[in-house]
Every structure is written in structure tokens, then in C-alpha cells.
Length: 411
Image (tube, rainbow, N blue to C red):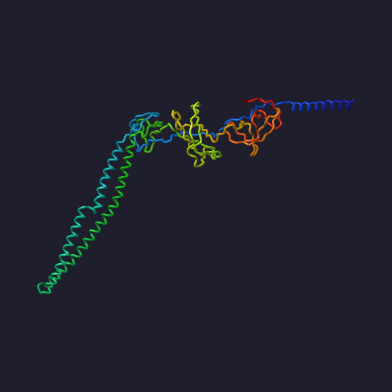
């Protein structure tokens, strides 16, 4: 009795399990997944590198303090358009002007000393040494003449030998006097030469001092060197500024530069004169255009990125693109007309190959493709698909080979 009942229970359980397996199998074969799809189309495609960048003036003209002091007066405000030659600010320059006048007086004195040295030293000493030497030479020459005459007179018994000997002693002394005075004159000339070399250095130093102080004194009057925008003026009347401190910056903002930070793997695609688009969150309705200008010369670390700094020239006629702002940059690398394209999200990677899931009879089939240029949203298909083919897009459903789907058009 129990044996028969047990068999019956096992038959019921087994039948239930078999029925469940069949139902699961049938359900799996008949269920469909809703998958977004799109058609392969022909379009004009532009390959774009997107990054961020910073706006810079093309030729900024900064004002810097040539000396430490106080801001005396401001004649302009930040953001103002100024004309070449317009006075922007003044610094209190009383002390630097006094230093300049003293430096000029020192220079005059050094130049006078140098002229005296080049003339042979102090005028009195030079004149006395020359006169003494000339007098000694004349005396010696006269004694030479007297000796010749006395020798003849002694031979004629018209003069004594004592007179001749006395003349010879005087001649010997005269020769010694000439040599002594010649050495003295030479020493004065040598000293004058050394003084001259030293004074040349002193004069050069004094001239440098005057030049430096003249430049510093000139910085007390901030005069606009060009027509442009005073886009930075970080000072106020009465502020104390230190030597070398930034007082303001003027630039012509009709043309600006954008320093774009390009990731290292993309640097090989960058060339000079490629079209550039610049976007700024503060004016989302605007797009500024320009060209690549200076290619990166090195790779630097910027946060977690390794980037090259690409300089782009950008037209900014309304002058509303402000220096030092952060912007988005798009560099157009290649442009092609009438090429097959698919959304980048539809393309999958498998090693060095690319594939999509093409829809055929409501089922997905892997299709390997070759790709060309790309932009942030679309990619060119060189082979493997035809215009009008339907491909699956990524979504909530995991896509796989032979998956039955219900296509949902994304167009």
C-alpha cells in the first residue's frame, strides 16, 4: 500500500518538474527583449578632439611697480577701455626722485674725475712734473755743451782742470736729476692709467644706477602703452605696493588665445591651423571660432592627466570672452562628406577589432566592422555595414548573439 502511494507521489513530482522545464524552455524561446535600434546612415562627419582650456590675452601689457611705495591716485577702473598714452594711476615718487637726483650728481663727479685721469692725472701734478723734467733736461744739455767748451779751453791753457772737473760733477748730478724726474713722471702716468681704469668702472656703475632709477621713477606713472582693455587693476588708492608687484594689465581683447590641455594619446592628431570651436558655460548660446597656432613642446602633469598645452588663436570681436576663464575646446581634426555612420555607443571592442549587433529578423547578430574617423557621438564605418542596416543600441538589456528582440526605433 505504502509502496504504491510512494510511486504515485514520485510520478506526480517528476511530471511537475518536467512540465516546468518545458514551460521555461518554451518561454525562453518565445520571450522578446525591448531594444533601442537605429539605422546606418550617410552623413558629413567631422572628427573632433574635445578638451578643456584657459583663455589668455594674446599680448598682455602688465604694469609693475619699479619701487616700493603708496598708490597716490587712480584715473581708471578695471574693465575700462583705455587709449594709448592715457594715464591709469600714479605712485608717490618723492623718495625715488631724490635718489635719482643724487645718482645724477654722483655720475657728473665720476665723469669729471675720469676726464682728469685720461688727461694724465691731477692737472697740478702733471704740469709740475713736466716742467721739472723739461728744466732738468735743459740744464743737463747746457752742462754737456759747457764740458765740450772747457775741454777745448783746457787744451789751449785758457781754463783750468779744476773748472772742467767741477763741470763734470755738475753734469753727473744733472743726469741723475733727469732720470729721477723721468721716473716720477712715468709713475704719475702709470697711476693715472690705473685711476682711469678704476674710474671707467665707477662711471659705468653710476650710469647704470641712473638708468635703473630713471626706469623705476617712470613706473610711478602708469601710462597705457596701447589701445585696449584694462582687464586687471588689483590696486586701490592708498595701497602700499612692493617693488615688482603687479599693478594692472592691459590687452587688446579682440583676439585672445586659448591654451587647450590635450591628453597625450591624442597629441599625434594635432596640427597647426586646424579649426577650433570654443564654448563657455557663462554664454551657452555662443560659440567662438579660431585656429590651432602653437603645438605642444612637452607633456606636463595636470592633476591625474598627462597633457600637452596647445595654443589656439580665437576671434573675440564682442570681447565677451574674458581672460583666465575655463572653457571647453573642440578641435576639428578631419571632415568627410557622405560617409556611413553609426552612434559610437553601438560599437563594441574586442581586442583590435570592432563589431556591432545588426538586427536581422528580430534577432541580433554580431557583425565585425572597420571604422574611420569619429566625433564624440558618431563613428565612420568603412566596411561591414550598408546604408539602411539596423543596429542595436546599448540599454538595460545585455546584448548577445541571436537574442530575440522587439526593436524600438531611436530616431
